[in-house]
Length: 525
Image 1 (tube, one colour):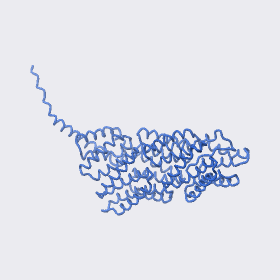
Image 2 (cartoon, one colour):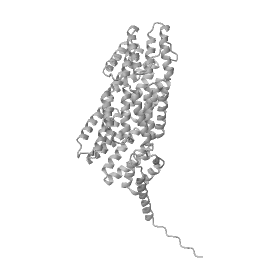
Image 3 (cartoon, one colour):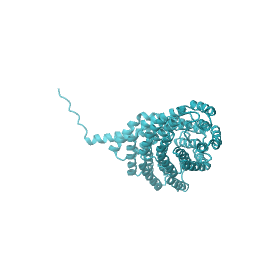
Image 4 (cartoon, helix red, strand yellow):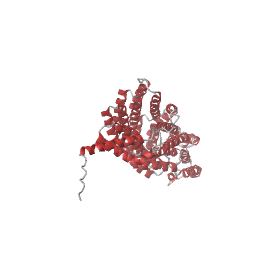
């Protein structure tokens, strides 16, 4: 029986051509299958890994291709949100090179901005600055406002993260002037979004200067501008978080919590669970300020877990720092010291100046409350210098109060009074910082005999009760007990403070202490 001849395989060149055609068809299908902008992309997540593999293969086999650029931009920002960072970094770099080769300047600017945002999340801040400047240069040359505003926002966030607030203010002024004089006149919606983005950075920088009322006006302006857009919008959630942060800074915790919950709910609807968990982690800090420590710790720990799983260093460093605050407030000082060691290491590794100053300051605070004043002093002095450089006046005042306590613990009452009086002076200019109005009075009372101390402590207690700060209320009660003449006189203050601390889960502070020699509870804004 004759066997039929084997079919002649096509030449290798034909196989390569067929494979390229297949890749091109798959790219086209993927682009057409992307959910419309603004719709929850929940169906996308199971396929994201294969789509990134497709982009990698297409880059190798097809070279610069407009469909690859289109698909990469269509996937943004979900690989960033969902922690697929190494593959996403490679895809963005390939797409940026392709956009340059194809003359797609606007798209190239967006891709450089996406690269900047990814480097911020990874904590690679010098690269973030480079990519943001490249995006700005291209957007300016194309007179393209949307990519310009996105790149400007990425640069400002990076500068703020690095603690370069003076440079950030300079660039913000420059950017806002450019936007208002943009030529040719931009689309009204593009102008609205650009103004809103920059107003959010204005609010953040005003907050750093403790100009909270002006900052709230800027945040409100952004929210009003964005109210004409769909509420399911990431920029709208950023504006909610900024306003919530400002409410929190003013001690309006319930309003702050409402904004953060609303932002997290919108992010859930957007199919962005990573960002929603992190927003709820920030909500944990608000619960911490309300002395709801169990809720705070649960939310913050969940954020830490998600950040660890996705290697989100920029978010992780803040969440770990928030966990330090919770442990310290609970009186778990040695646990707080261990978490703070990790906070310092992470902040140093990613170059986050603000978080590093916060972490070193926390270490000084923990050592101070452990009674290790000589060890605490270098950290407290360093932190004061850094906060002065950063222009954080409310933190300068807080650092001065703790330095006053530290010098008192080292039997240097002269310097103790000097720093506490500096804090009193600064606090007088920061009336909206209600916690400071409690803390400087406690600091002064610590350094003075009972007949001078008690009026300050009674004033501080009234502010704590009026502003619903139970931890500070307990602190003032313990301080008042410590200024009494006998244990019997001190006991009622102790018992009332003990009830409060037990209710909020901070009774560890009382371990080994007595009513007439109570602990000095920590200071926190």
